[in-house]
Image: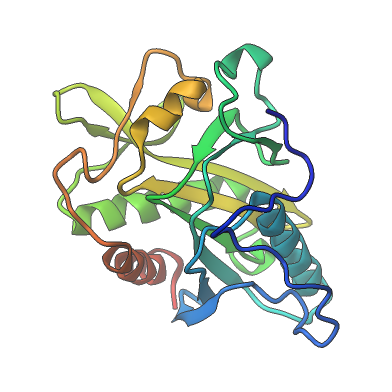
Length: 243
């Protein structure tokens, strides 16, 4: 199922209108605090993917125009697949959920309830202007957060994402990364599997890596609430990216 328009479903956050009096680049979530030099926002309901894309684009424009600062947005999406710029058609095995072109790098990724998505929208001109270093810091951020949850996360050469030893002793991916940078402003970000339905990943070859499993905190025996995960992500972001 290809879905390039607006998605409307019960329990899915959609734009309320043009909101001409809204602040430039407003993130459609509740303020969560300020960590790592960025204003944080959190959405309580799953956010439709087209809305998320539009909100990120608007924030990028506002930052470039000097009307807004860095932001990090915590959210979940309804079940869907996103297609990165390097995705191959044969990696979409079963389009059981809507499929969206994301504009980010990488291949196919699943998003859905139980997965914490974090979109840092950052002015990298003020943070070193080095895309590879930025991706490395994102990886370090996830690894630090997992460590606070008692999980050892690791990088793997040639395989994007963060990897762990799964419950069966094999190697599995617990977090995905995908970024886009426009005029040195970052979009998209990370997705950490807290307690999603792992069967939903079977409709794609996740990140183009056939033969590798996907896991979650719950599968590893870590029962963490989203509130707990969010607090850890905020604290470790501040440690990784500075105050």
